[in-house]
Amino acid sequence: MPRRIGIVSALHEELAAVLALLPDDQVQTIAGREFRRGHWHGQELVTVLSRVGKVAAATTATVLIERFGVEQIVFTGTAGGLGEGVAVGDVVVADAFLQHDIDASPLFPRHEVPLYGRSRFPADPALAARLAHAARHVLARPERTLGPDAVRDFALARPRVHTGLVVSGDRFVATAGESTALRQELPQALAVEMEGAAMAQVCLDYGVRFAALRTVSDRADDSAHVDFSRFAAQVASRYSAAMLEAYLQQVLADDAPTPA
Image 1 (spheres, rainbow, N blue to C red):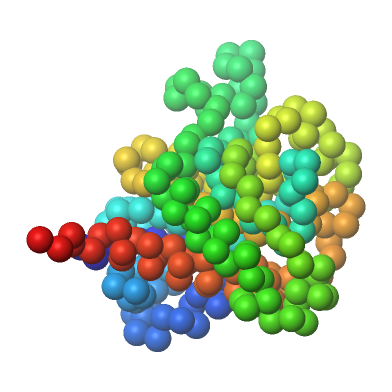
Image 2: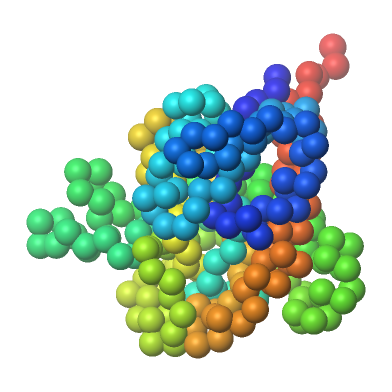
């Protein structure tokens, strides 16, 4: 049975290649955002740019659930690498999310979201596994998706898929000092971005399945300012389109009726 799936990125550069593949989309503007409805590989999609930050992400997730009735949400885009061995051009598939900048101590432990009794919000395991499988399929031949010039220019000959903790906060981590502090405080964190944990919290509230994949655009340190727009357009956006296509093909295959 076809599903209604929300596909979200923060910025247009991160989702441009996906939007180009949805020619039958219908646009509805809500809360200042353009929600585009279309079909791809037998699934009904609602694609949208959340804008940057946790509040923007929470607003977007709420509209997707309340107004469009999506059954699952997949977030895709870029992130800064934190974990050892997480390199530029690699892909991180989240198995859990945490807000690195929330601190209600001494009333609650640092990083714990008050009244939830938790600091980590899980990704849906089945969706995350499908995304990781799709990502490994695409990264096995990056030149097929990106072209040889982009692979050479960004030194992406052997990109890898990592699965683990992604942390979110309302600041862009762009210095070696900030990156080192985060790694020391949260040694299990693989990547840092600005939206995922908020969207995961909203999805938990509503019981909606959520997963995310992030292409590592930098190491969240003093090199983090290097030509982000070019990387997002030539690498992250194309990765997103190819990986989401492989993901939706899996969903379609898994949902196909078993022959009698």
